[in-house]
Amino acid sequence: MSENKSDPSFLFGGNRGRALIARLSTLMGPATSLRGHLVRGGLGSLAFKLGSTALSFILALLLARTLGPEGYGVYAFVLAVVSLLAIPTQLGLPELVVRETSKAQATGHWGLMRGLWRWSTLAVWLFSSFVLCIALFSLRAFADQLTALTHATLVAAMWLVPLIALGNLRGAALQGLRHVVLSQLPEHIFRPGLLIFLWLAVLVVLPAQTLSAATAMGIHALAAAIAFVLGAWLLWRALPVELASRPAPVYAARAWLLSALPLGLAAGVQVINAQSGVLLLGLFRTDEAVGTYKVALAVATLIPFGLMAVNVVVMPYFARLYAQDDRVRLQRLVTVSARVVLGLALPVTFVFVFYGEWFLSTAFGQDYAAGHTALAILALGQLVNAGMGSVGVLLNMTGHERDTLRGVAIAAVTDLVLGLVLIPPFGLVGAALATATTLVIWNLLLRQAVWRRLRIETMAFGSRRTYS
Image (cartoon, rainbow, N blue to C red; front, side):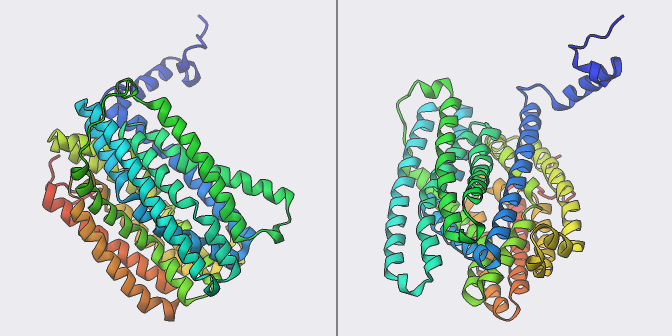
């Protein structure tokens, strides 16, 4: 009897293959079940996060090698400034949209969802316009105090401010609708992929010596604009039928604003924590030091890529399970996700701690090898960040965003003080120590807040009694 080659089990050896496929199907669960959604969404999110991480690494490698430490330092410094400018334009609205969209879909309140989307989009447009006006006026007023390259790079970067804010808002809407993979495509695949493609195209036409940080930032803005248009199309294609019928919008602006403010402040403080080392190095040290540190920082963020991928998947489910008061399944979801994140983080940390100098010199060039000690310190801090689990996301999705704000605010003050004390005398190592210490402090504070509010253990192998 011949094998049926249309049966996928043929590839795995007949009956043995059918047993394997059946086992995998059982582990994944039905596509409509919670396990099915989480496993499929998680695998898709991890695959896309791997792709996004690879693209980000290739982009950093390409720009760092082309621009050199000085030029890449200017690019990194300006990008850090843009990240800070994007804080007031978003005001915590992406996190709010994820949470409230998920809740509105669960309860079938489509008018409320439509009102939320319209209100948040208008708010981002208004805030972005206001921030851009102030930023452009400041650039003109202080132009004489900036180098020509830094000024040109800042002008090119201004267009990223509204594009980043609106792109995050659109991704939040898709994420709240549980389109986990689609929500990540525009910002994490399209934008870096387009930037790499456009940069390589420019390198073919123009000599590398003629390219600058301003050129790179202008191409970045163009890639972001194209990615935004593609993302808007994806959201339009993913609209639920109930929402596509254009129900009358319902607004709860006061409640949304009261929730968005602490979410926005918490998100903003986290951005400040992430960028403060680059900004302070730019103030106290050379552009070369900024470029070297930015490379070490970008490499260290490879460690918690599992945490970021898992957070995208679990955010709406945290909100749904908490709204349903299902603490048992919530604890199980938190524990399983924490174990996945820790398992992914450990081997990467080992490589960067013990072979960081070889990695930096091989991948980026000998000019960046000086950042190996900073990389080892940042890697250990990021391991703690990954090992603590989804602390901030869990608090935000269960309505305890004020606890998140309190924890990250304390950490931000610590980060600023440590940066001012350590960076002038110790440079790269001082910046890394300040950042790693901040990561540890805020994760410990947020983990304690989760236990106090929810009686949920966020670590993969916590010792406290849980609901499981």
